[in-house]
Image (tube, rainbow, N blue to C red; front, side, top):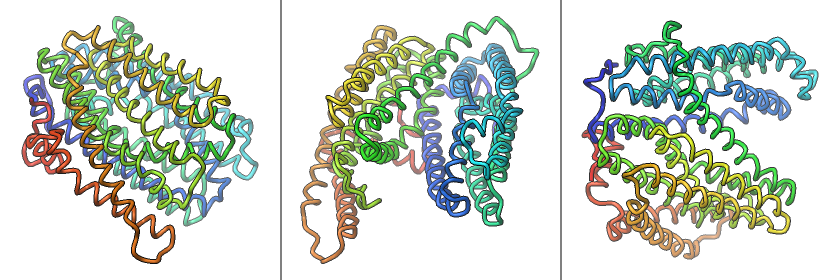
Length: 528
């Protein structure tokens, strides 16, 4: 693992594009491993602990998530500070920011989590944990509270690697610890151990991840050091302005995500809530590519803002939007058109309003993917105001639709979700155009229209193939599987001529994509 310094920092378009591409691929792999391990583990846990035991474990995991308070915003802020330092060579400022922020988080974690560790049994009892699981649940909460103290502090070392454009290393560590964690839990359950043993495995996994990030960060960027001597009050204002407001965005996003399912359950009952949950799971899965792209773009954007020219920034923004549209529009359009068929082939479920719910959530998902990209690029520029205003607008619009949910109906509420997303996108385009001199929404319109035309052509081919009857006498479920395979193959075959005819992806773009997947040469992702 080579050392990064100011002279070797990635400043060229091709170097940065190669790093972003590699980090994105590793992110997709890590997300796939997480989803796959959970898919396998859930039935195993239910088999050994019962549905009630799995429910208790889910509550413990949710509690552990809350124990990470503040770390999401801080990690993203630290990532930006390190990325800027590798571009400019100003490691002294980065050391002050990271040392002050991480040691402050350690103090907050000690104050907030020590009482949870001490009174874990009372908390478990108040939460309604049954007597047969009370001791194990309390022990698990205590152990995880103590573990999260160190994990919250150690999040800074993960951010150092991400800011140094080595997200691929953090994803590799994540894949390894996730796989070992799943294997260890399955083995322990097989030999009759329960919740507390599972918590031990998770605690060891968390600490191992922190240790790996610490060792790697010392090798990759030895100039970044977390020390008490670097703690200073002079950077407190910047930490509160940027990291604190970033965390506020996260809190508002949680409220935004929670509001709609509660509204649906209240007005339309548990069946509609199940339809919404199933459709949401499907839409979330096809956005895995963007999930993997977001963090590399934050690091790359911070470097370019610190060292690049306005022309380079304009190219970066244009290509970031182009790649985001490319990896989200077609998958979402496919799910919108064939989601009901996919769900039936997957689960055998045909719920009321399922098709409408899927395409409306796909529409909202596309707006949300653009909105997430806007947030990352806006934050990479160092600004920290309009993204919070945008989130407040989205919450307000969704809140109005939720209040009148009964009169609007199930589809009307989901349409409100899409409307809230669209309003957020429009507001951020206006805010970014007024804040960033090189930015103009007109840069993205031609590419978006070309991708839209190609997507429509591909989906039309899929719909035509779906109308062809299956010539064999088979069950409905088998028919759905055959149809899904035919449609997928037809869309895949139609994609190349559709992209070529519309000009959505040039020969250079296709070559860049190939190099991204098989990195023998540096990509030209950020080139003209």
